Amino acid sequence: MLNKKIAILILLSFFLIGCRTSPILEVTDAPINTASGKTPSLSLVTNEIIEAGIHLGWQMKKVTPGQIIGTLNLRKHMVKVDIAYSRTGYSIKYKDSNNMNYDGTNIHANYNNWVQNLNNAIATQVFNATN
Image (cartoon, rainbow, N blue to C red; front, side, top):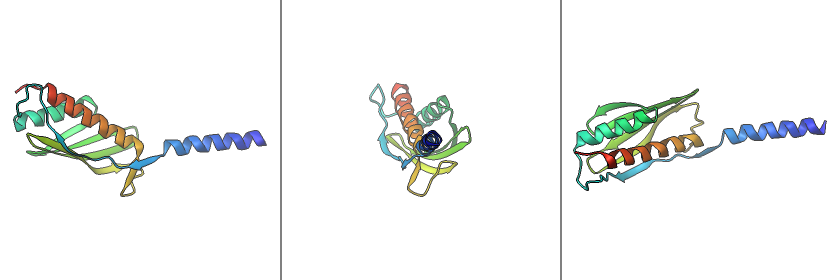
């Protein structure tokens, strides 16, 4: 009987660890830096943000000049972010999600990892781009 209770506690703890939430990560006014030191064109920034997302499995949709909606579908999870950008910077903000335990402030911790990976990919992609 004791072994059964221990097994249930272990399974419950794995479940709770898998459902952990964290305060939502938003990237605000990240600078656009290029290897050349030149300010890139808006179309180059657009293309590089889209490429960065696509390489990570995001679906990237240009809404207007200076705005892209990125959607990531993994297993039964979906997240959507709004990427506002200019020639000199960008921001990544939460837009929507499914099956991510979003409560208005906190979200499944994987969301923050995915957004951080997207942020790193955008910074790298734009840095390595040439006008």
